[in-house]
Length: 174
Ligand SMILES: [Zn+2]
Image (cartoon, rainbow, N blue to C red; front, side, top):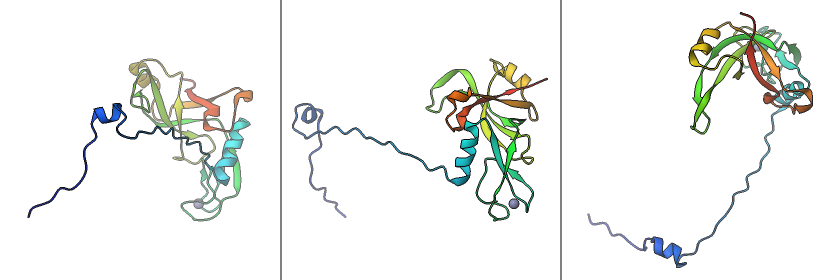
């Protein structure tokens, strides 16, 4: 079956540079705001005041962080806010030499899952580790599952109600 190709002339570099084709430049302005929702908003407000808030489910008796408006296990609304400690232990971590934009890092970044004291076992928040050594061998010698860590906060005047109000968690003791 024969297929007919219709229409069109391909644009050439000449057509574009000589002004034979209409060109327009458009700068996308995409400012936006994101609604954190009731539970996360209160959590972020707590961080601004140097406090990490969890929420307790009276049915399954778990204390969850980050807090949420309902228990995903029991499907019941949650209202019991609980202040947590800014200490905890390492559940797992990764040593990354790549930035979010895929460029290489000279010094590694260490994203980690941290179980905060006061939260239920296995309930972790994702954050960064710092003061954990410069080389991979130093880091792996210093860190492991169960390593005690503590939050390093921004100075109070610089906090803005964001998870980055905690700069990172650092290993303590050992
Ligand atoms: Zn529950």
